[in-house]
Every structure is written in structure tokens, then in C-alpha cells.
Length: 187
Image (cartoon, rainbow, N blue to C red; front, side):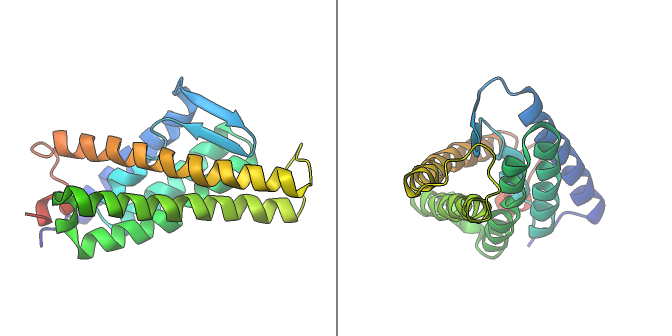
């Protein structure tokens, strides 16, 4: 099993965090109706980090969370910090099962399950804020929270799948120049 050196992990972490901070600041395709927001490609650095290692995935999830803290309301930043959960679990699974990315069917189910975890954890963050009356401008009704959670879960799942496949495409296209451990170890 080929590994990245610590210096290479640190370098990739820094680059991916920088990209992850820039994306929410400059991406022209954003949808934001607090507490819901979708920024195209905002998860790509995290998914790329998952292809390296669990430690890198956590570092990039934390770093991108700070990026969202700089340019979005606290509710959306807290959702971004929740990415630590899916990033760590996904990276750990890929580290132990790298061959999964070479099977389209298994890779889809991996992306789908990670997307569900991602969306559910984000919805839990919003739910906790809701029950603690921490959502500015929210209508504290059952219908409001139901609609928000449905939008977060289904929209989040689709957003996660799109960003996963963007990251997968980038990793695949740059595999010769930047062979990431999951791709190298999957052969």
C-alpha cells in the first residue's frame, strides 16, 4: 500500500484548504436561503482529501469550515464544520477498500451512502439550531422545519453526489501527475 509522505500530506492539505476557502468566496453559482445553501464544487476539496487519507480529510474539512465562517452566516458555517463526519468516515472506508473506486456500481453506492451521511448530519445541525431557536428569521413551526430538513436532505444528497463526481473526475484526470493514494492503491 503506497502512502504519501507527511510533507506531501501537509502540502496537499494546505492547497485543498486554500481552494476550499476560495470556492465559497468566488463561486458564481450559489443558492442561499438560510439555513440552506448550495455552492457548486464546495465539497470537491474535501472529496479530494478523502482520496488521500483520513487525517487530510479532517484537516481539509476543518479548513473549509473556516472558509465558510469567513463568508457565510454561522448556521451555514456550522453545517460546513459538520463535514468532518462524512470526510473522516469516507476517507477511512476508502483507505481500507480502495478498489471500490474501480467499480462504477460500488463507487456509486459509496458516493450515495457518503452523500446520505453528509446530508443527514447537516440536517441534524440545522435541527439542533432550530430546537434551540438559533435560526435567525426562521418560522418556528413544524411545517417550516419539515420543509427545511427535506430540502437539506434531498438537496444535500444531490449536491454531495455532484461534487463527489467532480472530485472523482479531477482525481482521475490528474492521476498521472498527482497519483492520490486511493487511486494508486486500488490497482
